[in-house]
Length: 127
Image 1 (cartoon, rainbow, N blue to C red):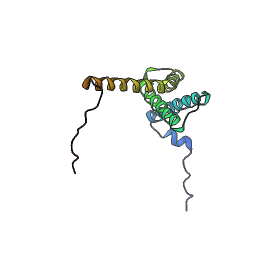
Image 2 (cartoon, rainbow, N blue to C red):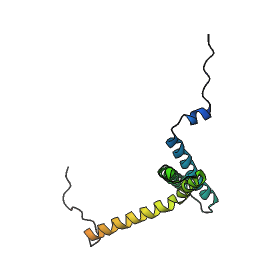
Image 3 (cartoon, rainbow, N blue to C red):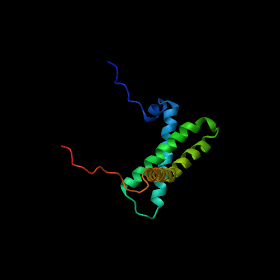
């Protein structure tokens, strides 16, 4: 009877992943940690939802930037700095884009309805 197989170690599991996945995970962790450091150093009180939203925005952005820029940098340190920096700046960029989209949407609504009031049907309700 042969001995049972030994479970793979963590380094074997990580080594078995495709390099794109491994690089994306590393970049995502860097972006999330950069955002976590910013929130920990902040003096303003924040809710858990605020922290989670910003952490996810930073992680996703850092992962996408890391995957998109991997072939452009010859230095791994520079590539990781760019990925982490993009995650660091992601929440402000996301907030700006949301405000811009909201302002454009409100401008279109005002253009479509200059009186500023929504059109409602005033009649008997259907049953």
